[in-house]
Length: 144
Image (cartoon, rainbow, N blue to C red; front, side):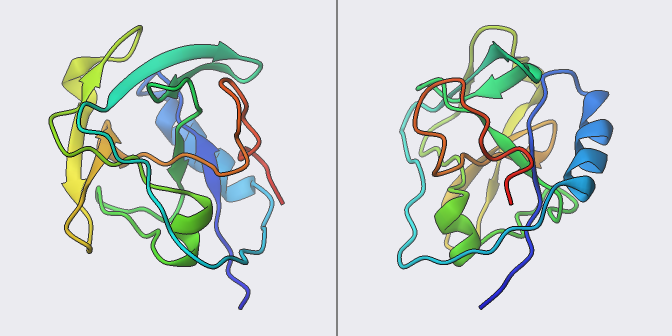
């Protein structure tokens, strides 16, 4: 099965979300092949910031890059199944918290189809990327 998915790094400045959305449209298409899905659950999920070669970005509590999905619309996730295998949604069982330069007023959650709560930033659902194995890696940006 071949599926086209476009993701972009979640930038910290809200006005850059439009630019990030445009960047995701230009991102390379990649093929998904996998077996099982696992999200990154945590009861006290923390969204923070880190500086990378792409600029200041959002990261999870482990320092791993958080991404936006270009097909998400109206604050709803369009990434499930194989997509969520490669792009695990940032899940929280409690109220998500912020640290660093992330703004508390922009953090929230949505309910996924499976009933879990996915963390959002400025109404954009957040994801990690399975090939980002170390803090600060941004392998999901432009991956093909």
